Image (cartoon, rainbow, N blue to C red; front, side, top):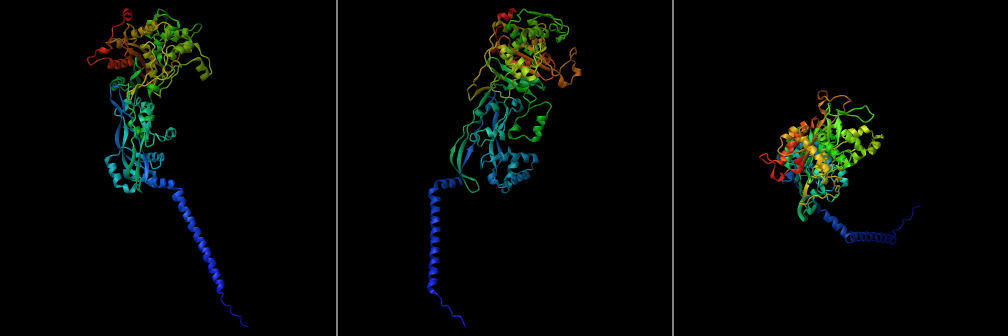
Length: 629
């Protein structure tokens, strides 16, 4: 039996359609409401945020690095300036695959893999977003043209003009002025990122580092509008940077060159100080080096040659070289002993050629093995008699010696603005106990009295001690900066003057120093006889290797670099000191024969006029006391 055919229920279909239409309308209304709410949130509630974000897409703040201050010598000769140079910069955010871009740069310019590694190191060190990082300095015209032709392959790469530090005097001031170099990662952590934004160099050594804050200046900025490619369309606002302050040095270029010529290419150091002001007139450490390659990034090969050289051109012998002072400290020892009351100007010691401690068989030899007989203080300094000073040291004792020599600046940093200076060593009982866990022995006191043993000094310390002899104990720290933007540096922690119970003690020791140069048996009388002015000086010899008891020094049996160092200190004119000089010639052997002539050449360059006569401003009648003596 067939099934009945169901008729269509139009009422039911209509209800279904109405429900679907209602649901669709509700969904549409909800979505419309959500869209309107979102638009209201973005355009009204977050208006400030998105307007700023939109503005930043076209407006960028670019730092304007300040121009670094210039450095002059005392006469206005430029020793550090800023030279315009074309540099190649890369902006990582605009370069895309910047590693590949570096490969293209190396390819088109025909550079080495070492340079490629250096470029990558510089780029990875970039600090701020969208900040161009210099990767190559001092582009030639050919390199600039090559970059222009291949610009389509180098996104984010630009050729820009920049001021780069330049040292026209080259190696003459490498150890005093120092140099600037690229900011490394360690320095970056300690620097103010705002103050150094846009700046890629910082003082590394010398005056450049000590006066970094003054030389650097203050950064400026400008707001620029850019297109989608990051090209600058216009400048919206600009605040100019403040240039760094200029520094005038105390050093004289002509005297510096004269001192270098006097050293004659030998390894060594020279320091010349104006005693009355503490101004360093010349500061030579030889051999030296050209600091200019360090500014833009020295190659690995060139740096390795400097670092590994046996002559150590990077080593600042004036500030960091530690040498036994030898007999150069005998005048200071004499002042100390006179003030302590252990000797008088007329005290005499018999010298058979050696000295022995009571109840000891060991002989401490005088350099003159045959002895000088009865020796007074004047003759002891004039002849550099070791026996006299062995006896003096034994009477003084290590405690008083340490106290007095510290007053002369030994064993401490003496400069005002030379951060690289080493303190040296003035040993004491406590020092030896802490260092070696041993007591102090009497024999160590004796050899300390002639500037040997544990004592270590820098040429700068010897020059300052000599300046104190010249000023009769007036302490003025040696310094390299004469003025900073016209104002002199200030010593915030001045050292106390050396006050003696009897000021005549200075004259006794100073007279002995004059006899070294002008006395009948003075160790440097050959140099003094050729001088048109009177010099007060003292020679010294510092042992490099020890010699066994009873053995005599034989230069032919010693390697050249194991021979004694030659030292000499002096001030002049003796009655009106205008310059104090300390000279150290490595392995020069004879203080009087090698170092003394160097001292005189330096003094002549400062004190004499073109006719070879003492300049009028330095002439002074000889004191009655000196004339009588």
